[in-house]
Image 1 (tube, one colour):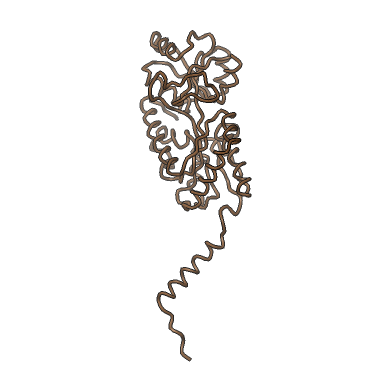
Image 2 (image 1 turned 135 degrees about the vertical axis):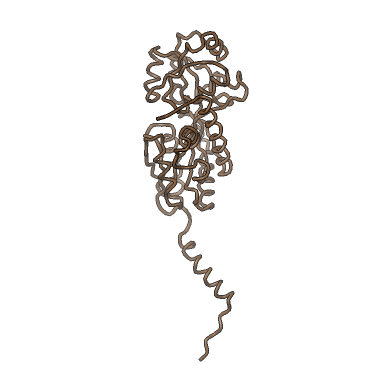
Length: 326
């Protein structure tokens, strides 16, 4: 009995069908828990907002989104780990202005990941406005008065920052460069000790996040001089933006979700769409604002362009400031 002749096209079609079976069997993403790697200890802004997003996506996906904090090393080990993770959408990073925007310039030639090309951006979550604050004893009430005082006494004023290379430090250096003033950086090991010295009057000036400074401003323990975002923020509507005095000034902390670079496009787009849908909800918007942030979702293309622009901006600020880390 002769065998039936199978045509070449039929063989190819059968092979393609067989190859597609596992993909069909996998079902819709996600089918198991997803991990959010946060490159900072609990309590920092990226952790706070990352947990909010993890909670919302857990409910939407009916799969737990687990937050794993991997602090230390300026977030570099954590981001390197996500870069090397399986590109399947189950290990994601809450990348930030520090790990994705500042590190490329601050650790130029030594960074084990490429912030622009080693990750697939899904969506940003929020911006954290920064704020120039002053002790009540400093004789300034406006940004123009601060600039005038700094020009009158070059190098005499000092400002506290959470440390060299922090977004607060570099935002203040950008302000100094733009305003043409000389104000000394007084680096601390974290925001907490710097705020304590500002409240005690040991330092007179500080660049801080709105999240951290807001309670003290509302209690009248420190003065809010200006916010660093392009426009005023809802938490402090009466406090002007630096851009109202220095046109074009715009700086903020931020964080969003990125996946390893080879993650399938369909998964990246689903994560992005679901994040954007959650961030658009009024209750989520209110919560982000209550926590001191500004909702800032975007498509993968928008977030990728944003990261690229932030790398360029902060690399230039590092250069003009001469910021160095050991």
